[in-house]
Image 1 (cartoon, rainbow, N blue to C red):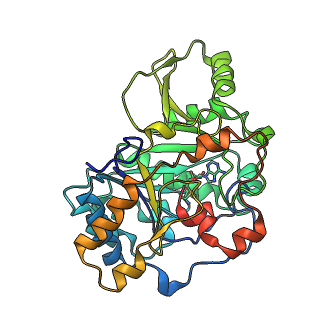
Image 2 (tube, rainbow, N blue to C red):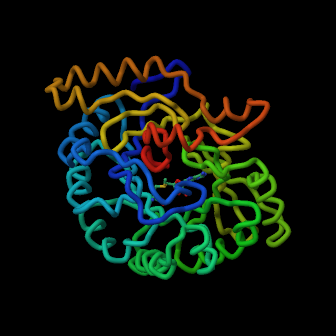
Length: 339
Ligand code: SAM
């Protein structure tokens, strides 16, 4: 097992398959136009599968497909089949905005995708439209309900909670999750690259979310479990479970075993990192498997990143990157490196 300077193993890879997205969420892609990664730089599915296999040599056994919007990458089920055939990947998941899910769910499940997480920030069509600047709320719900009905286990719904936007929907989302057999996870609004409209006032902390939910449901108990998963899980008095990802007010860098590979093959050790390691050039220049393993191993062994904790320690917190800088380097964008 490869460990970094804080003893954290390399286990979890978030693989962004495209930087393109079909929504323009205010907290992630607030601009209409972006500088996109050049098409020729995009890794092929074979290149992705090869790199994942190299990562598996170093201990990675969990892969999450993300983006941009992963379902915009054509024939994604072919990549799923390639990765699903890798016996060392114990957990193969995807995070999607759900717009194209209803039409692709069957093929992805058949190809070997283990589970799906859908981002759902609101149950209200008007809010969805204001938040995403697109009119596809009904399609997202259709996608979620298709997965729920099919009995595909492990469905999760991720909600970014923002004050004055959707923070009055926490209980409604839990109720909806119950109806579609999904576990809901509330994510604190993060000041990641891309979130140029972020402000601390907009963040609803884990403590506040719990207090509000206790008002509605009564005492909430933490679920005690040893895991590196970002969500802390809680149980309502009736037994239902939900999660909170408190990356802004109570970050969990100490247990972070995640790294991120962009669709053009740049590897980031932290969501907040400003520099990544380009793996595409060596790969395309014919680097051997051993050479790639060494590149990745040495980089991980030197890792000391604790991006979210560093952000928390800042006296005055503002958006991480300004728009002009993002335009110069799209790799700083959340939608390029995946959430
Ligand atoms: N398009 C896919 C989706 O919507 O799930 C995958 C990519 S998206 C970048 C991955 C996750 O990052 C989504 O759940 C999204 O809500 C989350 N995200 C984006 N910006 C965020 C922010 N500023 N704070 C917290 N979560 C954010």
